[in-house]
Image: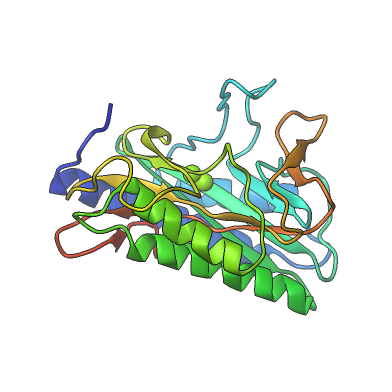
Length: 255
Ligand code: MG
Ligand code: MG
């Protein structure tokens, strides 16, 4: 079932989204060569705690997962696409890092992700991150009243295809509100004009996941969570929670 949010609820989601943005900003600022992924999680935990927010990631166990998720961020490095567990890995020069974070504040949720490089970047990684950002921007631009979910999906996939990047077929964006994952699903590919109609008050997480090697398949680590590219190529993941409004798409997960 799709819940259309009141304007009051959207304001509460904006507050939750701001906490997500603060946690991501702090984690990114802490990321440097030699820093452990676990330390980035600790930074994000502190931001959430100081804001009085709960983590929708911590303890989360969807049907595909063998264990509850042990952290408040996902930290996915290089060929890891999404769902990386922040462990004792120390960041190295030239790493490409994607961090995903959620926050629940006063019963409402935000969800966002960023990708960036540590130390001296590879030009190809910067191009991959730029393409992923462009795919997200195109998806957000298509998220207007009168369009449908398929218009967002098509906008995302058009950018990914032009960049010769692959995307997983079974992970994508989602409705969001009281829960992190609500209906409708927001696939990263689709037909224009198809799917659920976009209305004022619909809140969505849009999250392109691009794989530089161009393949759409991936493999899962023995931990049951971390998804990696099948060909060892690098991956990027950028996400915002947005609201569809009569005035156009409103990004809720900004500072
Ligand atoms: Mg996310
Ligand atoms: Mg999400």
